[in-house]
Structures are given as structure tokens and as C-alpha cells.
Amino acid sequence: MERRKFIKKTTLTSLAALIGTEIVFGSNMLKNYKPLALQETDPFKLFSLDSEMVVLNDKPWNIEAKAHLLDDKITPSSKMFIRNNGLIPTEIDEQNWTLTIDGESVKNKTTFTLNDLKTKFKEYTYQLTLECGGNGRSEFDPPAKGNQWTVGAVSCATWTGVRLKDVLEAVGIKNDAVYIGYHAADTHLSGDPSKEPISRGAPMSKALEDETLIAYKMNGKKIPVAHGFPLRLVAGGWPASVSGKWINRISIRNIEHDGTKMTGTAYRVPKFPVAPGEKVKDEDMKIIESMPVKSLITYPKSGAIIKKGDSLAIRGHAWAGDLEVAKMEYSIDFGATWHQASIEKPVNRLAWQHFSAKINFPKVGYYEVWARATDSNNIAQPMLLPGWNPKGYLNNACHRIAIKVK
Ligand SMILES: Nc1nc2c(c(=O)[nH]1)N[C@H]1C(S)=C(S)[C@@H](COP(=O)(O)O)O[C@H]1N2
Ligand SMILES: [Mo]
Image (tube, helix red, strand yellow):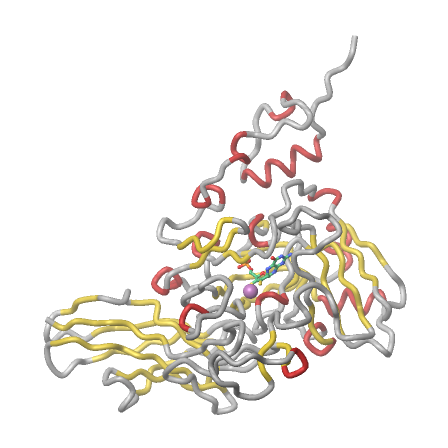
């Protein structure tokens, strides 16, 4: 009698991880059986999202938060933006997942299992700010193609893993190393397995920073599938596209990494100011590195109404790429005068910082509260849209909320 092929234990474990709980009668499932829960197409259920999250695109999934949803000091996955260039991998086998370190400038090409990484290297935990290079793109005029992010493509979660630096040092880095590039398990939109949706990286100096992690936990739990389960590169302060999700290979390169979306206009801005709408030659574009200083008022929600005589407590977060936020101010008169807000120190380098202020309004009427952060190099956010660029990157204009005093 022919034996029916039942699902393997390893597959069961990874299916359970995808679903988020044990599949109680899982051993009864036939091989290749896809649990209904994984056929879910509602992104709110699929990714356990807050009902106010905004879906910008469903193929690939691109989902953003609204400012007031980002009020938590540590962003929970239900309110964390999702930015995909391709299709999320569907068959993730955590037990057999490996990470290979190769490239022209590796001394000893090595493949690590997840368990190798966890047992051979010291574990670190940091809160790291990840902002999409295109956050704020929707304001550019003439418009820039791509997901029309407003303000919500930013997060600061707790990431746990090993230092990329420790892993690179263990395999040996040749003297001619200049860049690292990641490769991942997601699928190109065309379905063509020879094409990668994205393969970016960073210069050795960023790769070797203490806070650059190969992470296997987010907010103390396994990384949610949408955010890179089971293994993700996390390089806070740089465009989040550097933080490869579902990574299975990191190459130590002797040239600037030339993977998908490293070249041409992707994640690049003009080397000099250009007029809105101007065409810019590829050779006049440079790779975005540290993100500019920025802030977000997360409380109250824009449109709040307060009673005459009441003061208003506002709060939010500010971040400054590789730098720290040194000063936080607010204005209630469209930027004519600015007042000091208080700003906390970051929990660790590259974590966003929390600000707060108590505001009194002179009389009833309509106001806007504007927030402005200044970094440790004394560079402040612009009050309005900064330099136009072809792909609509790096909009760090002041965030504003509307308030009525009645
Ligand atoms: N493998 C892979 N990694 C990726 C991406 C992707 O499409 N595939 N998108 C990048 C981009 S552009 C951003 S902004 C962040 C988004 O991270 P999140 O979805 O966890 O918020 O992941 C980056 N890492
Ligand atoms: Mo991004």
C-alpha cells in the first residue's frame, strides 16, 4: 500500500511560525497542503495591522502608518510600515535557514545556520530607527513616481541579533573590501527567479558599526514575516532599503555593491540642487547615506479640539540619521516664532528620541502646531518641502498638526 506523504516536522514548525501559533492537528495535514490561514488576502488580518493603517499598494504590499499611530515609544508591528519591492517569501524553513558570507573580499567564505549565528556570536539588542528613503514622497511637485508615502514610513522597534561586524571579522575581511551587499529570499514581481527585487548594501564603515545587526528578533519575539523573518539586516539611520529582509547571503565586495536598486536613480539624489522636474544624468546622482533630521508629532491627532484656557500637551519622536537630535522646537504662528520643547536622549545610538511640550494658546481660533528638530551638526528641518529630486526622496519638512481652540 502506498504511504501518504505527510508534512515534515520542520515545515510544520515554520508554518506555525507564519500563522503565529501551533497547528494542533498539523501532523494530519498532507504534504503541500496550504493552511487556509495562509491563503488570507486581507492585509489587516494577514499582517495583524491596526485598522487605521493605510494600504498604498497590494502588489507588492506597501502599507503606512498615520502620525498618531506612531505614538508608542517602541513601534509595535501592528503599526509598523511595510515596504516591499517584490513578493514576500512563502516557504520559509527557519530550521534550515542559512546565511552565507561570500564576495570578492571575504577571506573564508562561510555558511552559517541560524543556530550557528545565535551560539557563536554575542547577542545585542538596540532600538533602531528605520525610515524609508521615500517617506514624504507624496508632497513633491511635480510628483515623483513610486509609493505615495505621507509621513508614516518610519519606525523604531527593538531589534535583537548579532553584530554584522563580529560575523564579518570571524570570516575575515580582505584589505580591499569597500562595501557589503545583501541577497534575500523574496521573489521578483515578474516571478523570474533569476531577478532580485532588491539587493542593496552599505560601505564597510556602516557595516562595521556596533549597531548594525543581523537580527532574528523584533520587539523580543521572532521577526514578523512581513518584516524579514527569520533573518534581517538592520542598519538604523540609513534609508531602510539598506536593511535587507529575509537575508540568506551577504557579499563582502571590493567595489561599491552593484545589486538591484543600487544603481541608476534608485535611492539616489542629485549631487547638487536641481529645478523641480529637471532631468538629472545618472552620473550626477549620489547614493543616499545617513538620513536627514526629522520629527513627527504623534499626539494629539491633527484636528484636535481643545477648550479655551486649557493647555495642550504635545509629544512625538525625532531622529537624525547617524547623528543625534540636539534641539526640538515648536511654533504655533506658522514659523514666525519658535519655542523650546524638551527632548530626551536616545536609549542608544540610532534610536529615535522623544519630545514633548506644553502649549498655551492666546485666544480661541484655528492654529497649526509645527515641530522642528535640529541635529548635532546644527542642521534643522526645513519648514517646507526641501530640494526636489526625480524620485522624491528625503522629504524632511516640518510635520504640522491642526488645532482648534473653542
Ligand atoms: N529583501 C528585501 N528587503 C527589503 C525590502 C525588500 O523589498 N526586500 N525593502 C526595503 C525597503 S525599501 C524598506 S523601506 C524596508 C522596509 O522595512 P519594513 O517593511 O520592515 O518596514 O525594507 C527594506 N528591505
Ligand atoms: Mo524604502
